[in-house]
Picture 1 (cartoon, rainbow, N blue to C red):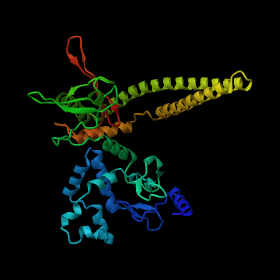
Picture 2 (cartoon, rainbow, N blue to C red; picture 1 turned 90 degrees about the vertical axis):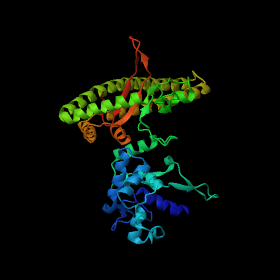
Picture 3 (cartoon, helix red, strand yellow; picture 1 turned 30 degrees about the vertical axis):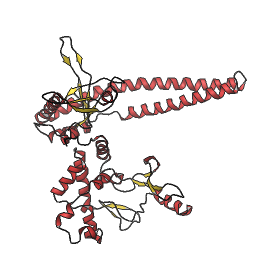
Picture 4 (cartoon, helix red, strand yellow; picture 1 turned 90 degrees about the horizontal axis):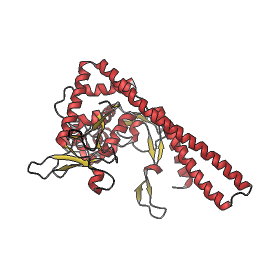
Length: 397
């Protein structure tokens, strides 16, 4: 492709046009506007269902099984019935063939920003002008154009699904998938908690800080907790909040908003202090830099020292500017709204009076669980703090 052609394509990309030959599943090409997508209501509901299943904690394999069990046709079947595409897969095949969903396809679909209204260009490129082998382009080098068409999925659902995909663990050797996978964190080092199985006469499961397990005494401590202890505690807390939501929804709503106000105020107080400190230091560095220039201009310092100190101050100025910007943005976004609280109440009411924990339940209600290092109390008993951060509302226990 010559330079002129590349320029023409880039102009189309920046204008929000999609030049692909086919529309992604859930969309069709707009009949009146060239290179524009519009939602295909015949298939968009399937995309919404897939994201909803993932949002509620289902992995790729279980989503595929659910779609097959409910006899929902796969994308290839729609191509075959609409324009004869994929005929070699469906022509003359039994009916169940149209309900067979590909796991790699589901993974690609769930990570595709097309469904939140964005278009990503230049996903693939060649190694060099001599080597034409196609390679995947790093995400930061792709051309991302936002808002090119109507979204099927909301950004918050999409982001939640991406976090779950990133944190989800593989099955263990015994084929058991652990329901807490991706939720347990060490509050001291930030690493995920690792599952283990004791080798005693009566084996039991436990979790331990992943960093400690990999590096032993370097950097962290065990943060050890038995699986059955953790399970019982989390189930009890969810049962408590489920009963509260059923008993008096408005009373619980007011309590959540009040708890959110306390936590938000504490967070804002800390961030305001950090922001003031960063702004003060930035003003000091700006003054030092101005004085440095004056000293160099009148010959009080050498050019070597001027260049060395200039580099140092410029680096610190950049770091402080980024910190001020980040803290300002955080102060603008630290919120606990009534809408957030109501979302969580609606979610927990879906799991009224739960008697057991499942991965979908946990991933729907909980953002993360922090397992602290146990300590010995004054009475000699072991004590351990476990913090549950719920989705939309944070920590309320």
